Length: 168
Image 1 (cartoon, one colour):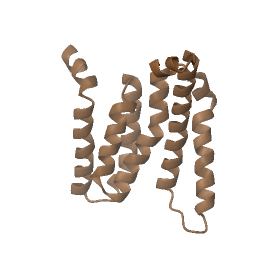
Image 2: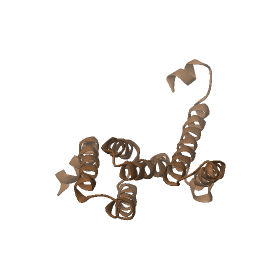
Image 3: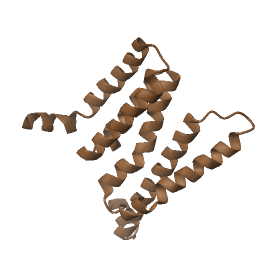
Image 4: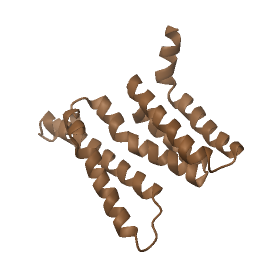
């Protein structure tokens, strides 16, 4: 805000920049989710990329998103959900804990700022785990990926979880 004010611009530029960034994150996250999860050979690559772009436009410009753009924290979580889900599915498909750690980092930074949306994101990740991971890999490998996500999520989400545990 200080930099924008120092350049002689008003605060609406900052707000518009935040909204544009959220819309780009929503579009990019959904684009990545579709491209990472749909197998595309050379003949279908363009159609998958076009479909991913249309899905990203829908996620970023649908009626609900436009109506809730003023609720910054909720819209941040909404925008990050496709990216979190895409990274998690990538971790399960490629069987690499590094993608689980990236999903946990994204979840902790952007996907858990409001408790009810954090629970929604966790439900989405559990469903993806059952659909994608549990039926396609060995239980030991599945447990390592879940463990990496859970440990990173607990460490990175401690700012959110510790005050809740203190109330119990």
